[in-house]
Length: 171
Image (cartoon, rainbow, N blue to C red):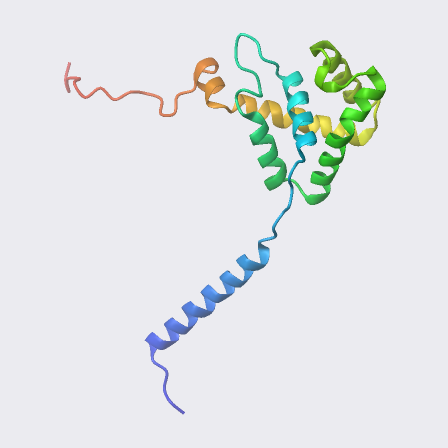
């Protein structure tokens, strides 16, 4: 029986620890295939454009909030919630067509708002109501955290206080 040195023991323990961490990290990676179709993407943008429309200040679409919402849905929500969200985004054009007898893409802002209010009240089911609440929350969160809104309207400063290098030490 040979003696093991402290250096060999530490080396072995380090390799065992790294191997365990690498195994669990590789095991925890689960690829999510959450992608919107073109129609679902257009519906998402139409609804978000009605939630925070363009005016004298940029709206949700021009500030890139749809990218934020898609990223949050992909990275932070469970597969069941993602699928429910996708299903409702796919159904919204049909629901709008049945209610208003025209496509959502050619509807006026007031028609879109009335449709959103009906979704909010639960007229089209609890799943659509919950999806709209999620979409609305993510849209507002994404909009309020954009650089334009934070700097121009909320007076956000990354590092408040300024350094004045020319100030005398004693007054």
